[in-house]
Image (cartoon, rainbow over all chains, first blue to last red; front, side):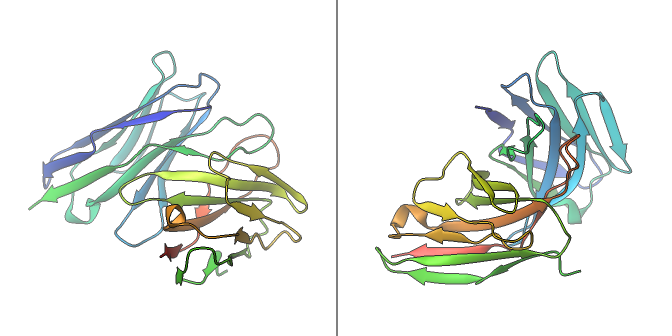
Amino acid sequence: GENVEQHPSTLSVQEGDSAVIKCTYSDSASNYFPWYKQELGKRPQLIIDIRSNVGEKKDQRIAVTLNKTAKHFSLHITETQPEDSAVYFCAASTYRGGADGLTFGKGTHLIIQP
Amino acid sequence: NAGVTQTPKFRILKIGQSMTLQCAQDMNHNYMYWYRQDPGMGLKLIYYSVGAGITDKGEVPNGYNVSRSTTEDFPLRLELAAPSQTSVYFCASSYSLGGSQETQYFGPGTRLLVL
């Protein structure tokens, strides 16, 4: 089955700086890669996703890049703000005409230092 | 829309007891999922369903059962609770016409403690 590795486990950046979180996946058939943000005690919430036919996607301060050859994808957050502090999870899914759920990384605790 | 709802929010079980975690969605989504999240870890798929009457195992199905009698509801049953089942359980749903994976929306979670 799919295996998703996520790094780093903790990332501390100064407010206003950029943050980058990286993930690798093992199944070359995976074709959907969402990123979720989870605040303490809350549910995961989708912040951005990318499909295998796209190399990059941007939404305001958040961007995701995908390298299918290397089987890795990354989350980029620019101009970080205190409200960006949370745990971020990457995930991968292989859709073959029927949903088989998401395989998640172990998460990155992003800390924004004032 | 209420989205995805889960009950109860928190429950303490004794070893060997059974319980059902409830999940409902009012978005007319065809796909529903159950995940568990252990402390400091990512979510792991327990079971999923692509429609009423159809369920399938995920990565960690042992000790759990599900049913999907309606589009809206997807209960998760724990039989003979064990300490290893202490976790936060999230239900999720999504909609797909069969062409691609779509956004999964998560419920607020059920925190389960087995003592």
